[in-house]
Image (cartoon, rainbow, N blue to C red; front, side, top):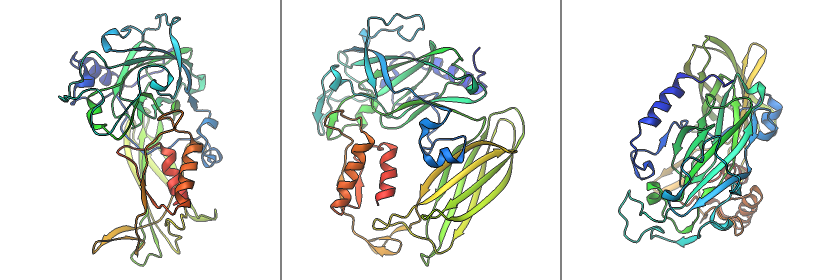
Length: 418
């Protein structure tokens, strides 16, 4: 039995089928199809203890798809297996590849190092990608869905895929994405079933987006960050934004929280939102409980404002972090808990001088690309922590991200180490 999809899925499928038949990976007017809106990176948990532990894999509603995928590589799009996404397609003769991993350092294609020229042409005519050599990787992975995910919204998350890709689930086209260092999420609730499922990806080494990704680093491709499934409740936090400047005296923290709520159910619901802020020493800075009503199949915005007295400000020398916990409950039942670590600081420029919390500072920064000498653009948490400890050892207090968003864990480390 398939999970029940919403009308939004049907509308998105119609849009997908309405796209002109030309290569949309060479069409600048199309950068995504049926992809979820961008949001803050966070994981919903079923309890506060799990949320504070911060290990998504411990949640019953999280499933990693990292590991071995069936894989087929060709030099040009015309040679790709065009029906590989079908559930009855026989991939017995295919090889396999680890996900995440870059093709070129695993025997598929050639890694290219350049600064400013394009690696695919010396005569650029954007958005055209020259014919004849634009490798395509086709991926297939089988997975199962737990029975108790059935009444929840199920999404698939790709942390980074270079350069552009189409996705199918159980033989049905779900969507398309470019923006190779941005997360791509798709709602697959209407495509999956409780028995075995199949996800298939068709990844292009170069797209029109590659004209914006001409950087001084190794040009390699593939699925470069984590892939996972998660199931969230029908009444959920879709996004949140915590703003934390200091007041004019730099002694109070002006905490302002915006929470975007979504009710996908067919019922008007009354929920409770518990917002809690803990000091760096673990003691409570404030706690607030709000009752919120949200109409069926609708969205709502919930705002929390609070002054934190005697605040411990965040600086590069004293990177003090407060823990924010947000719990959504229906009656006595916890629907979800999300958590984040935030710091209070004010950054401004006055008379040409950069100030942090009213104090003049100098930036001592470095350039950083995501690169591992062995695994390419697939970066382990251990290497990230080794990098940032080395930076702090040499009094570095700023880092240039080299044109693209880093792995989300890097930003956590920057918060932690200052």
